Length: 342
Image (cartoon, rainbow, N blue to C red; front, side, top):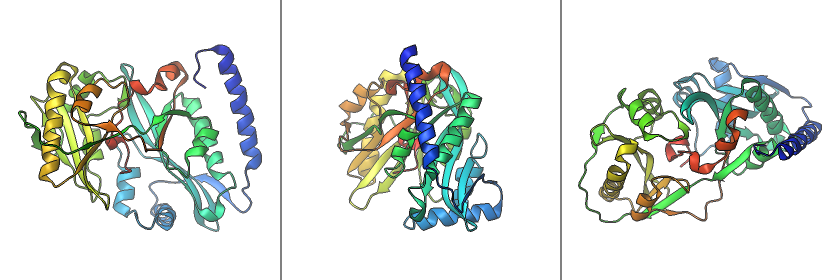
């Protein structure tokens, strides 16, 4: 879909068209209807929470979490399409609004998340139909999107024309004793200078990380984060202590620095992370870092190795004018802070 070769592009469009026809032929909406949720309506919120908590009872959503996730994002309300039957939601497809740094400019984008269908209604083409509607919206506004699907919905993204960017680039390090010669400064929230740090990090593609975004992102209800600034307002670090039932882990949710400080600040900051993990009784440290990332050597020196057993994928869909660069994993800055799934 994003090939630079015109012949391949035409073939891909044809395949995509045939695929869409096939998907539509498979659709069975008997007794059901498709519509867009009014995200600010209290009754609608109840119906969405009912579906989510019915499907994922071990990780129930609160009203506060719903509001934070869908209503309070710094770039506007989420878009949520549903299939309903008998006055309840049986399938949903959600996209939250993001602002991307994209090859030197800033552009609106979407993160698709919380894509699910009630087991009793699976196999009827609901997610493919909702995806088709979303893709039509995207192409009409020439916007971009990315997503981190679970294994249940992964193939629906392949079928609906998304491009597989990479496996989720999880790296893991065992905590070790390291000399810490630079101490980050703890902060309760980030200030306006954060946008300057992000811009000077000179990252080709990634969610625009200014203080408004970071304070929203790490204001997630019922979740504790440790926030730091690095050097003389030269970088940002956010850590989360997490227990997965087997190990106590520290997640590096954010770590980015001005490009002029990359060689002098990343390594010492990772040494601090090891110290922080040991102080918090953690055995492991995890992060996301794609192959080809400019900081990779420093992470490897700090003991971070790819988790080769990981089988989750990241998918993207880029606007036509940037499509060839959008699908190159080495251009992306993706962290565990970009996904709520730990």
